[in-house]
Image (tube, rainbow over all chains, first blue to last red):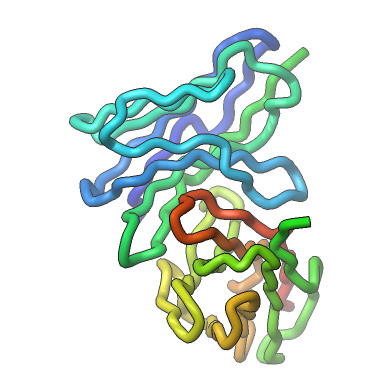
Length: 113
Length: 112
């Protein structure tokens, strides 16, 4: 049973454009929602994260939007650059008492020059 | 340099031959976890540990064992590997009070 659904599976964006990746979750007990970025041959690296008491979090060109009632959250990459080309994973976990972390299936982003 | 180190990076083995993938972190992190990554399936958690001698199952623990005898090490043991365990494996750790995991570079395992 997949607890976090991620879309799209792949995304091609022109340099300078906006990349948007969406995730939806089922378990309302989730209270931490990170995004990881993975380059080929490397392990995932934490990019940005949000907790459900906040509707938006911005770090540089990366923004998470969170809709608690719809159980959805999304990653927006503004002014996308070729160096942003990577696979992005959303995830969800329940903090405190457990280290279970559930990932989406990933989105391969390609930013064309 | 703060890091999670996995060994080996690549391994080809035969069905049924016991193997261990080592994982070590030098950041004094309390929490450690193992994941497998398969095309189209993303990352799936195998086991995690919240402290020395404290381990628990993730979503796909069947066919795997772990141990946490020391804080820095969290080896993944495949007692009798099968071809369906062919995958890319990642070890990760995090510090209590901080929520992001630091991942190793991965171990690509092929079971023939």
